[in-house]
Length: 114
Length: 109
Image 1 (cartoon, rainbow over the protein chains, first blue to last red):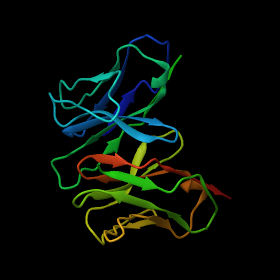
Image 2: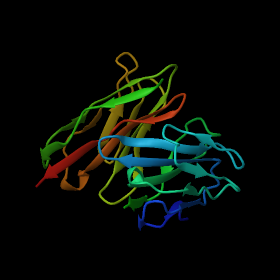
Image 3: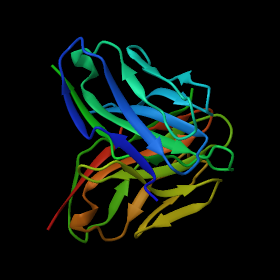
Image 4: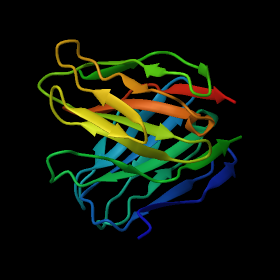
């Protein structure tokens, strides 16, 4: 069982380019999340999805979009990258149908926008 | 809204020292509380959790007790090791899932 996988592991991107970060989970969790982690700011929620076919905005959604066509995949797209989007991005999933909504995290994608 | 506050790091300790990382929260209702750990170069992992007042979560020698009267969930370990060097995040699951800013721990041999 792989859990949650993210791709790529790292990426250097020119400003203005489009980029999609991939996230796949094999736990059949209904909920999935995208966070960015910046020094001194901890984790901040970008977008989330409570179930396939639905998405919602988190704390810092501007400049990002997501889709949830099926249960397993939750890609994050930067339509036109800017240097302030340089960060480490973590995907997470949880089975929110249970009593405790424990989140499980992927290994992260380190993105540098020049 | 819900929030989590952690002690600022970095925290530097010698091996076998006692560790406390403070965490306090603000939330309506009765959130579940968590500690996550992030080792260098890795993603976050759940370390322990507690779902109701007075519950004690424990794992790998770490403990934290859900104290509703002081709205706290302090992380403790009696004797830290070099391998415990990591960033520790306190989090709660209330109206939303909220993380604290993280506390970096460095343990020196």
